[in-house]
Amino acid sequence: MARQRKTVSAVARVAIPESLGGDQPAFEPRHEDPRHEEPLRRISKHQVVFDYLHASIQSGAYKPGDRLPSEAELGTMFDASRITVAKAVLELQRMNLVTRRPGAGTHVQARQQAEGYTFGLLIPELGFTEIFEPICHGMMRSPFARPDALLWGNASGAGNSGSHPETAEEAEQMAQHFIAQRVSGVFFAPLELIPDKDAANRRVMRLLDRAKVPVVLLDRCYLPYPERSAHDLVGIDNRRTGYQATEHLIRHGVTRLAFLGEEYSAPTVDARITGFHEALRRHGIRPEIEPVWRGSSQDHEFVRKMLEESQPEGVVCANDVTAARLMQALLVLGRRIPEDLRIVGIDDVKYASLLPVPLTTMHQNCAAIGVIAMATMLERLEHPELPTRDILLPTRLVVRRSCGSHLNA
Image (tube, rainbow, N blue to C red):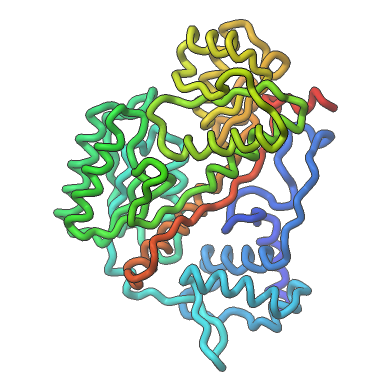
């Protein structure tokens, strides 16, 4: 029992609140200046128990077939009630990570049949959009995936400004290749940032559906809202994320706000815009002109027009790439960040803290998305009769200097 308690202590330091595992301390929020920390949200005890068991299964501390500590033992380890422990174990069971047998206890699920599966990764923006590489690595770190069971495929036509028209053609070719390889399923991140993205995504999905290849969508649906495909989706709660990013600026006294996103963005951006508008309404802010701007943040004339017409005090960007490019344009235009304009991004990519002004952003746990995507695919293969699901992970705010919260101290 003493050895188990030592493991609990080590795992508890790396758990993330409201997520399914992660890479940031749960008890030490990442702020630029600790004097300006926001109130720390308390982690529920069942989440601590879940994070410990989930991380132990992922790391291999508990291997397939191993018996987990009993609910009574876990209750003693974490000073938790049986109901709290049972809730955490039930979440693992729903993810198909453990099995519970009366009289025999709870065991890590053994998936020998998974060794016969091969999956295709159809991610046109792999290598150009930061979030997809850690998502793929999360799949590879899943206790149910073998590296040689994942066929990597990405279109090479994408550039720094987004997907090019030829990317759609290559995505179709890759789908046909996966069909020819008789893969067991495909993880698909739909195309965006091209005028005919909706038609291109429908063509890709038509190929896979006709071949009866199971598909799990990553990050976004390929159909514009309110349409919904018949395939499982794993991503983040974009509407809530847009709301929280906007409310953070409002709470620091920013009332003239704009939202900036690229044209032909994915439906995820539309959901973030919905959250942006909801935050404005909730706080009684009624902009005199339309606050949502669609265009390239690399276009200095476009940025100048946004600043002159909206005169924003703060901008919520659709993602960190847009925020970084806006930051470069503002510096060229002689604007100070955050003194003249406060910025919040979404994603928390690797370089967010390395920008000229470290970027305040909403962190999404990409590795956890990958792990859950793999579990979702395996469950879909075993239970094809299940209803279509949206599995949306929460995000959390990472405060740095670009939002100007330190100016309010």
